[in-house]
Length: 425
Image (cartoon, rainbow, N blue to C red; front, side, top):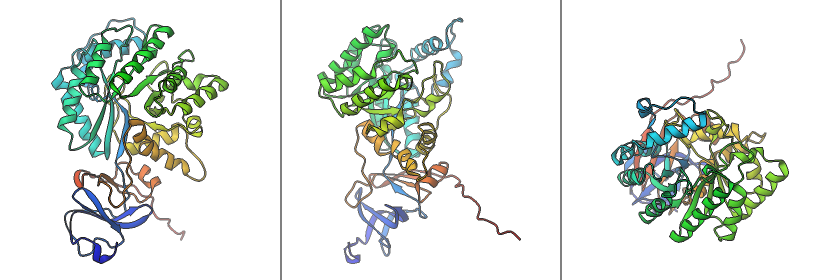
């Protein structure tokens, strides 16, 4: 585009940014990027401006695995009473059932809304959220999250999974409730086959999930082989059913921790089937702590090497399962870099860590990932750093979130830099 072709007035200018490795100005009008180039902003007026000070302009991040219905509910735990003598796992499950039994539609909408606003502040454009649908909470949690989704639609996109956490066989009323949620607009069907009484019921659970997916024409977002327990063996039948049902590219598997414990030959066979099935795998680096039995991080590096798309997700945030979390994708990516692990001499692992919360996460969530180019919709994140390593170092730094060409969130913060070397006297 020549200087004479540039508009004289736009809605937003992002000045002095780093785009595709070079410095440029980004001009936005009517929600679309109309120009990218060095000096493109010269003489152009704009309703809003961002001085990127050399910072990266990138597509919004994607939260590939979360539970917005449970988010921020930890404050309600103290009022619950639990019987003594339970194992840690049973106590956690019992406490979650008791907690969600107290949820109301307005309570879920309030907490989920706060969760989604935080996502926007952190530069997240899409949230993939599993929402419990079972005979404990009924459709209450689903309706609350759908209300929050509608109320925050100007800030973030939400992909809702109807998630029968209590099972589909041992909680038989859940099947019809999940079907009702899908009929009411849930985007994907979820599941947790390992939470059934035995392997046979787990297989039946899988078959119910695929039946619902085919009935409603939706994808699958399922938790499988959650713990580092070698007896958990649902990933392989999941891959086999994905191929048999012609659903390649429509299934996302979360956690997949048991894969860590398989004998190497078994692991290679299962990973090959996952790759053939086009299943994306979303791991949660926070699974490395806080739970017994250990939940693990799967064989993420081996999955990546086999061509499987691997994403990283937050999982739980300030709820029964995790007291922490800030939804910062840079924090999550840096943790994943250590946990996967992605260390190498060329720093290519840094790019992979970025992709775990970017393009890979978008694929896991089933949404497009649009690079900032002329003609693209102006959904953008502007960071303080001009390269990926500094971006991961400086997760508390300034950040702007742009949606449809409007600045919808901005975050202030300090940027850490190493001091310049001091010459010896």
